Image (cartoon, rainbow, N blue to C red; front, side):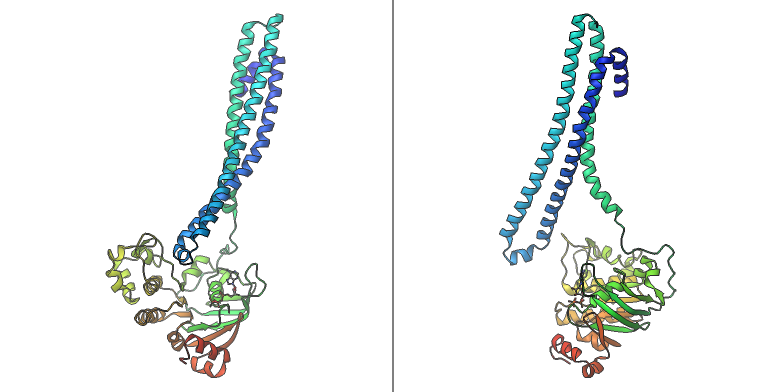
Length: 435
Ligand SMILES: Nc1ncnc2c1ncn2[C@@H]1O[C@H](COP(=O)(O)OP(=O)(O)OP(=O)(O)O)[C@@H](O)[C@H]1O
């Protein structure tokens, strides 16, 4: 429409058209200039709203801790300040957008006014007929209307571009850990032999390595318990085995294959993780268990739950395996969550089991049930357990004592009690002198 109107204008009145056409860039320039500003403001405004959401989510998910520390008034003030900031950004963005439209309209109508004045003069002087002026005004109004719409659309595009920029940044982010293009296949069945050769790893932004020149060989089916003071690198060892990070030096192998040459899904599929505070997702008990095996039917779920000493309490839930968990669903005790996580790992049937035992004191009965479940889970698998309980340490084939990212001693409980001062100290601390 714009092009057609401009052609008709040029054919009927070249000099008047020239005036209008000079008006067009004069209109577009402020639009582009203001458009950039609106785009920047749009992004700031979105960041502020996201920050607001993050703050609210954090406060609500930790509401009990927040109330226990009577932190409500402080959080209310902080939240209020963030709302004000987000509101301020939104107001500024809206103001600038209003300016954008206003300036564009002003320039367009100024050009129309000038054109009418010049055209009126020409009609009075007799160099143009009233009909020709009417036709020209009609074309010019069409052109001006199209430009006004363009200004509007440009504003919307700039606003959308502000939002898209952030999204594209996220989409374009390349994960640091990726599967190789031609991954090596894992042998089937897996033996579950693990080695770490001179592995050093430092977390991004940290100077001291979390693991430093770490050498370890774990035989297939071996039960290894890892102990050490807080910050020794125990969790880091599990994170590297799952390839959440790559070591900066040295190599890690599973069944003689460097883990960085394996398909990530295959590597992680071979490992079962039971975390210290097991994460359960929104959804039913059955859905949570099927994270271990999406295809498992109810009979397999029941068997796994039975082996994990979880069947009795699941059956006692209001809707059994269909009881919803997570926010808005049933809350489970620490021991019950652990046993569900163990059932989930049993369904996955991994060759290697990585276990971060719960530190929270489970009561004696719960601990007995969890330990029974773990014993069944560990049968026939290589297991690496971050040990917080005496029972695991005693049952393990070998204990690894970590300190400052290094393996400082290894052996059975009885050996280490005599050979390692650090282990003696830890055992006395962790197990209350029950050595
Ligand atoms: N995500 C992270 N980013 C930066 N540093 C980290 C991160 N996780 C752990 N660290 C650091 O790495 C070191 C080893 O931590 P790690 O969690 O492996 O210790 P840990 O032995 O498991 O301790 P704990 O028994 O307290 O869980 C610590 O100094 C810790 O501060």
